[in-house]
Length: 281
Image (cartoon, rainbow, N blue to C red):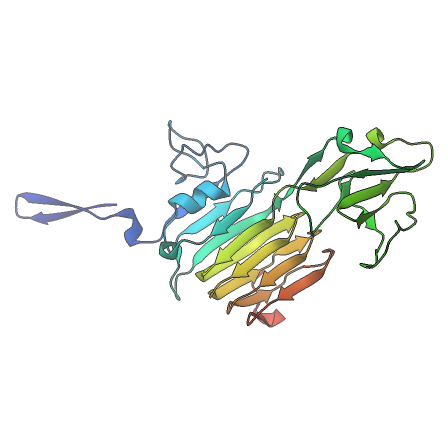
């Protein structure tokens, strides 16, 4: 920003750095370019316009900025972490991440070639990462058959069911069908949004789905973190995990359909619910 101060016939130009006041960074995964400034929601001259990724917005943002994510109808295939001390907002003017209903998706297509037939209608593949699993079939989380940790034999699977057993994922196809007649996805990223030692951050109207561990993970000693109208579903562990001595306030959130837990509170973490009447639309 440029300010001009007039003293008689002398014009004094004072350059005020951009970070002296809150700004807005725009993200658009359909029109954006990570080489752009991020200062405009639409394309302008070369170099002016939205960035393409949330990761890039985190790199160029300053404390108390707003990061506005366009809901283009296309998922953002990203895993992003906010762990910059200088990106902390203020108590009065927090860092705001506005999602506009956009989706961060952690799953990627799984090729039929990874599957091996082990019985008449049953196939298996070996995930690269062990410990937490999720299987998406034709765009929807498939029904999981529970397996006792002490089991020595594979459980009987119903058609369209899957299970995790001894480091492999098993899936049973429908009668008369083969494995290459389905579209499979498996988690590629561990966490959708990581907040580590975050301060004064508001995340609102943003959706997370199909990550290997958690949709949102708040770690370290995070304070004054608020999640408003956030949906985090179909993740391999939890919709929200809070650990260390972090404290999180939540309101209007949907954490259903995760494999292990809706909320996973570890060590001395704490989650406080915002009264419904105080949750902004």
